[in-house]
Length: 262
Image (cartoon, rainbow, N blue to C red; front, top):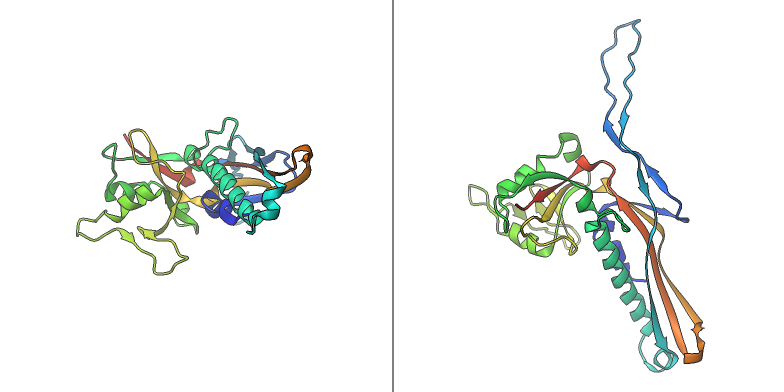
């Protein structure tokens, strides 16, 4: 099937591919161990990390059926199977991408936005400023902010707003990429456009920034497209079944912050 399903959140997250759908336990720390100076011949003090409740990743199934007549498959004169594979990849890719972005965690994955923590509030309900984005970036802990993989995520309309922002000297804060396959930059961090992110509006979380690989995606076998010539045999139809089993969550919520519109 199409590679569309690999884009959006799947492009930036830590993806765990498994053959089965049994629950996976992902640890989450609230307090780290602390190293201290120990004198020669002195007993070394204990410093245990403190764990939050473990994050459980299951396997929600996204699926649908498509039926095509044998006449269409035999008489179309085009690569209808290749077209179907792309269509399936798009349909499941965007459905899963939306869940991994804004899913609530109830009967669906907990999306990267829902799992993130608040890092700041914009000045108005319909816009944000360059200062808002600077504050959001630096609301991250310094250790997390400097990890490889830190970046921004927003939809196309928000990227358009960012392109117009200037600092106090009149310089644009947006830095366009000089290579086709490289992302644009904002305040030294890459921007990943995700159509599942919401528009800027009252009460929304339209922009996130942080260590995006801290978000875990669990995939069971990847996207599957199976064919049956027997399911609708009496109607001379070929049935295609598309399935994608996936879950997602963010164990360290402090690693990704969102900007809240008032």
